[in-house]
Image (cartoon, rainbow, N blue to C red):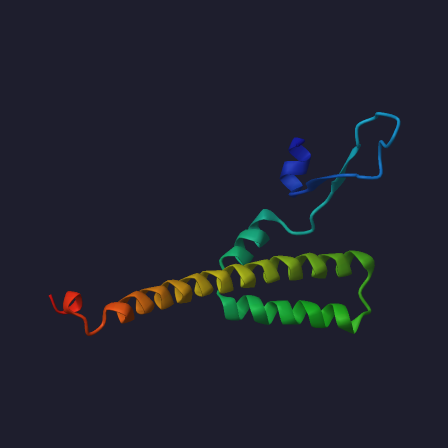
Amino acid sequence: MSEKAKETGSEKKTDQTAGGDDGQTPQETVLASTLSEKERETIAKLPYEQARDQLIEAVHALEAGGLDLDASMRQWEIGEALAKRAQELLGQVRAKLDAAREEQASAGASAGTQSNLD
């Protein structure tokens, strides 16, 4: 990735339509990210409720319309990052709940048995 791409946080994506049957390799196109690394880091640290609330705001802004293409794309990208953060946090909670259920089930299996009283 070029230094300029690193600075702007742009991402590379392979263009699947390029190349084809002529044996040429697909061309790479660079899609510029509208979010800075700092913005991404900030979103990655948000608690669930704040990520959810900001996601709702981003969705409302898109649904309301009236944004130009660049602003719409920025809202979309913000929404994607916020949704990813919220899902990540929900996944962590889900894993904790599953672990607690497993622990409870294993403790319940031996409850009231001699091995539990030793």
